[in-house]
Amino acid sequence: MSASRFPLVPSEVPRVETKHRRIVTAIPVPQALPVLETLARCESVAMHGQLPVVWDTAEGFQVRDVWGNQWIDFTSTIFVANAGHANPRIVAALRRVLDKPLLHAYNYGTAIRAEYLQYLIDHTPAQFEKACLFSAGTEATEAALRLMRLHAAKTGKRRPGIVALEGCFHGETLGARMLGHNPAKKRWVGYLDPNIHHIPFPYPWREQAVRQPAAFFEATMAELLAREGLDPQADLAGFMLETFQGWAAAFYPPDYVHALHTFARRHGMLITFDEMQAGFGRTGRLFGYMHYGIEPDLMCCGKGASSSVPLSLILGPTSVLDLPEHGDMYSTHSANPMACAAGLANLQALLDDGLIENAARLGAVFHAKLEALQERYPCLISRVCGKGLIAAVIFTDPAGAPLAPLCDRIAELAMQRGLLVVHTGRESIKLAPPLCITEEALTEGIDVLESCVRDLTGG
Ligand SMILES: Cc1ncc(COP(=O)(O)O)c(C=O)c1O
Image (cartoon, rainbow, N blue to C red; front, side, top):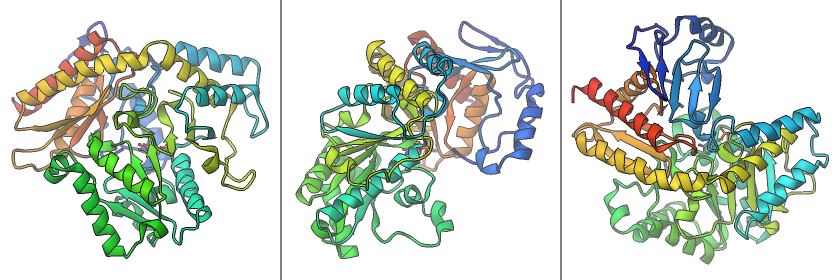
């Protein structure tokens, strides 16, 4: 999320009335201002920066306020509502828990937790033998850091080194911040973990990475080892990879991941994929790493794991998941009965209701249309990245300079026209509709996006 501030000044905007969108007030809505002003007064600024829409209800791929406005949602909140907002299976499952009632059970046994975990293990690849449930994604990435290091200690390594990728993000807590690359975001910590290393990301605009992905991995890894004086067999515990790099939805070339996998296997290192944005059908496969043709040891998930209430998890082999001491890796709200019920209903909806297939099928339409948009605006849109129903449209000027302010203005104008997009605070607009969206609504949303680009740039 960016720190951009969108003006809290209502603008008279043209009325919109289509099958999927409705804008019938000034935007932001004048009556919404007291809510937004109360939040500004009572809440840390660290929570703010979103478009000034006050959500009242969200169903399927649409978001509504109480003043009659309705948006097509290309955000899934923030890559959460994969199964659709208020998916009926999830609502019914939550209702059953509420009606029981059983709103919290700490880590005492519950039937719903056992049912969810069994289903999760049965429906994910074979190396995922056990899971640990949490609430926030950052807890899951912290758990990965810890498990990879415990594994290194158990296998007799000298140092618990973790290799992560430049430009990646893994959450807001201390360890996750250390795994993330952005130096400005960890200045407050006061020190850097000497056993967390970063290597360059193979962006699609890095010529060498595209031409020779495996050689790019090997050269950048060799440079790290030489610079830090590391012996990977003794000093490196594992790799932490965001499945695609968030702000740009940039995937790795598969050969890069294969080379990394070969290196990890040769040197007794574990591989963790952070599937927070990529998991649970978003890319047209159950998990995003499946596009690379390798199997990781550990996988961290959150967001689309429940499409709703707080749920995150780490999955891996028993030999790694059982490394912490008995009763030593959980938090108070881990495995809440509502989270388990939502997680189970969500996975059933994704697998049984054709939502992943929909993401794959509509993903092809989505990317074809976005690429056509890029072709119409080659001086503004340098690239469209992503797979399935996740895309980043990257705006740069002809000299390659980032156009972040333009992206904020596009996001704001789209909101005024009944489309919500993810503004990243950078030179990208991210698009991630719920996987239940229809082709008609998807097309309408892209047409709105194009109208915003056209009207803001005179193109
Ligand atoms: C790739 C990635 N990892 C980790 C996180 C942290 O998840 P949470 O905000 O649930 O702690 C996020 C959140 O945006 C993310 O995108």
